[in-house]
Image 1 (tube, rainbow, N blue to C red):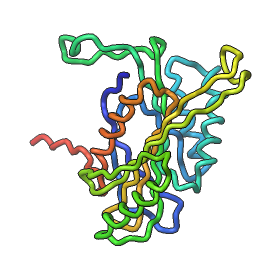
Image 2 (cartoon, one colour):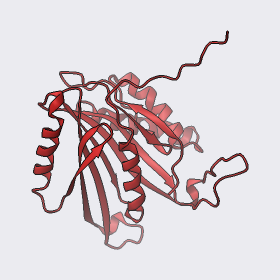
Image 3 (cartoon, helix red, strand yellow):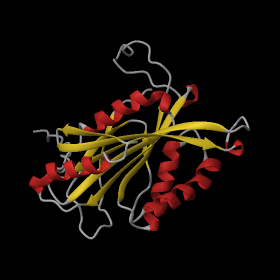
Length: 244
């Protein structure tokens, strides 16, 4: 699975009664952020941009009918606490060598094979003081560990304590939902990580869901890399020094 250059994602204002403190993180290239916004007009505008990035080889015959669909998905997410949502599409083509003569890593067309995932981040209110992040994480771990189907584990991240929870589920697909016309089993996986804010009474919940479980190890590595970038401070913008 090929995933390249990082881009920074910061959570916008949530519809909660109290706005959460700053939260930022990096996601790899290949994530396409859904058009979440506060107003229908903003969602429509962002949906137009989203479909052109997602279907970059398409045209108006694809973009125009697709945009309202994704704007409607964004509207359904309004008020749920989800502040960032993205579709991840990654090539399964193998890289050969370390790059070209300029050190650039080769990019591959998704037509050569692709895997996908859904990724969301929510900031939900939790009753804790800044010094109680450990206590909140311990409570989350105890709660999630009660379910024998959960693989719940403690994490020590650069930003503070966290709890991961991995679940695998096998779905039964009806014949009309499969390409072969026969009933089939579909294995799906979810990685969810709860990260209590160290700066306010909120907990960030990072969730990755995929049916491309043949690449489960790569998705686990991807989530681990994203978590290493989580910060509860305002992202610092790049400043270009003025010429004297």
